[in-house]
Length: 54
Image (cartoon, rainbow, N blue to C red):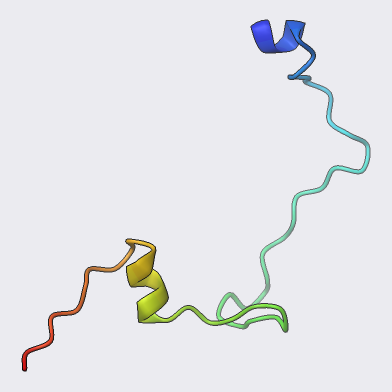
């Protein structure tokens, strides 16, 4: 209610609002996307660190 009163929350959607559709082939990358690597996932905390035995 406070957000509505402050004008920060509105239930009206803009007329040009649209939700992007997922690609037909989820494994295909567009020209502006890079493939995720294990290192990227590890840095984000989404993959357990690899254990390397010397």
